[in-house]
Length: 108
Image (cartoon, rainbow, N blue to C red; front, side):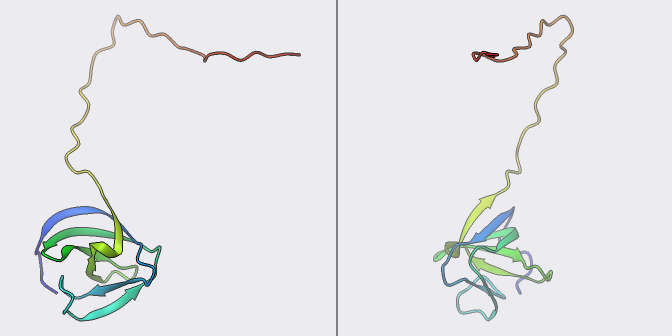
Protein backbone atom coordinates (compact mmCIF):
# COMPACT_ATOMS: atom_id res chain seq x y z
CA UNK A 1 0.00 0.00 0.00
CA UNK A 2 1.24 3.49 -0.85
CA UNK A 3 1.98 5.34 2.40
CA UNK A 4 0.72 8.86 3.03
CA UNK A 5 -0.67 9.70 -0.38
CA UNK A 6 -3.67 11.93 -0.79
CA UNK A 7 -5.07 14.49 1.60
CA UNK A 8 -5.87 14.08 5.26
CA UNK A 9 -9.62 13.74 5.75
CA UNK A 10 -11.81 11.94 8.22
CA UNK A 11 -15.33 10.68 8.33
CA UNK A 12 -17.46 7.63 7.66
CA UNK A 13 -18.02 5.82 4.37
CA UNK A 14 -21.23 3.79 4.16
CA UNK A 15 -21.14 1.18 1.41
CA UNK A 16 -24.13 1.80 -0.90
CA UNK A 17 -23.25 -0.31 -3.93
CA UNK A 18 -25.86 -3.13 -3.98
CA UNK A 19 -23.10 -5.59 -4.94
CA UNK A 20 -20.88 -4.51 -2.05
CA UNK A 21 -17.56 -2.75 -2.51
CA UNK A 22 -14.07 -3.95 -3.27
CA UNK A 23 -11.25 -2.86 -0.99
CA UNK A 24 -7.97 -2.37 -2.84
CA UNK A 25 -4.39 -2.27 -1.62
CA UNK A 26 -3.82 0.97 -3.60
CA UNK A 27 -6.16 3.68 -4.93
CA UNK A 28 -6.42 2.19 -8.41
CA UNK A 29 -8.94 -0.24 -9.93
CA UNK A 30 -6.05 -2.27 -11.36
CA UNK A 31 -4.60 -2.78 -7.86
CA UNK A 32 -5.10 -6.00 -5.91
CA UNK A 33 -8.49 -6.52 -4.29
CA UNK A 34 -7.92 -7.99 -0.85
CA UNK A 35 -11.45 -7.83 0.52
CA UNK A 36 -15.05 -7.18 -0.50
CA UNK A 37 -17.41 -5.61 2.03
CA UNK A 38 -21.19 -5.80 2.10
CA UNK A 39 -23.72 -3.07 1.42
CA UNK A 40 -24.56 -1.05 4.53
CA UNK A 41 -21.16 -1.47 6.21
CA UNK A 42 -19.79 1.69 7.88
CA UNK A 43 -16.06 2.27 7.45
CA UNK A 44 -14.03 5.09 9.02
CA UNK A 45 -11.59 6.81 6.68
CA UNK A 46 -8.49 8.94 7.24
CA UNK A 47 -7.38 10.05 3.78
CA UNK A 48 -8.88 11.09 0.46
CA UNK A 49 -7.08 10.59 -2.84
CA UNK A 50 -8.58 12.41 -5.85
CA UNK A 51 -8.27 10.52 -9.12
CA UNK A 52 -9.53 11.10 -12.68
CA UNK A 53 -11.99 8.20 -12.16
CA UNK A 54 -13.27 9.50 -8.82
CA UNK A 55 -12.18 9.97 -5.24
CA UNK A 56 -10.65 7.14 -3.23
CA UNK A 57 -10.78 6.85 0.56
CA UNK A 58 -8.26 5.08 2.76
CA UNK A 59 -10.50 3.12 5.11
CA UNK A 60 -9.94 1.04 8.21
CA UNK A 61 -11.61 -2.37 8.26
CA UNK A 62 -13.08 -3.97 11.38
CA UNK A 63 -9.96 -6.12 11.79
CA UNK A 64 -7.75 -2.99 11.76
CA UNK A 65 -6.38 -3.51 8.26
CA UNK A 66 -6.36 -0.52 5.92
CA UNK A 67 -7.31 -0.38 2.28
CA UNK A 68 -8.76 1.89 -0.40
CA UNK A 69 -12.45 2.27 -1.24
CA UNK A 70 -13.70 3.93 -4.44
CA UNK A 71 -15.97 6.79 -3.39
CA UNK A 72 -18.66 5.95 -5.96
CA UNK A 73 -19.34 2.71 -4.04
CA UNK A 74 -20.26 4.57 -0.85
CA UNK A 75 -22.01 7.50 0.77
CA UNK A 76 -19.22 9.69 2.15
CA UNK A 77 -19.75 11.81 5.28
CA UNK A 78 -16.75 13.99 6.01
CA UNK A 79 -16.13 15.12 9.58
CA UNK A 80 -15.58 18.90 9.57
CA UNK A 81 -12.08 19.75 10.77
CA UNK A 82 -12.07 23.54 10.70
CA UNK A 83 -14.87 24.38 13.09
CA UNK A 84 -14.11 27.60 14.95
CA UNK A 85 -14.95 27.54 18.65
CA UNK A 86 -17.72 29.85 19.77
CA UNK A 87 -16.44 32.92 21.58
CA UNK A 88 -17.08 33.00 25.30
CA UNK A 89 -19.09 35.92 26.52
CA UNK A 90 -19.83 37.39 29.88
CA UNK A 91 -23.51 37.13 30.85
CA UNK A 92 -23.10 39.32 33.91
CA UNK A 93 -26.04 41.74 34.06
CA UNK A 94 -27.91 39.98 31.26
CA UNK A 95 -31.63 39.34 31.57
CA UNK A 96 -32.41 35.71 30.85
CA UNK A 97 -36.02 34.80 30.11
CA UNK A 98 -37.14 31.19 30.42
CA UNK A 99 -40.08 30.39 28.17
CA UNK A 100 -42.05 27.37 29.44
CA UNK A 101 -43.70 26.78 26.07
CA UNK A 102 -46.68 27.93 24.09
CA UNK A 103 -50.29 26.88 23.75
CA UNK A 104 -52.03 23.86 25.06
CA UNK A 105 -54.32 23.58 27.98
CA UNK A 106 -55.04 21.06 30.64
CA UNK A 107 -58.67 20.05 30.88
CA UNK A 108 -59.76 18.08 33.92
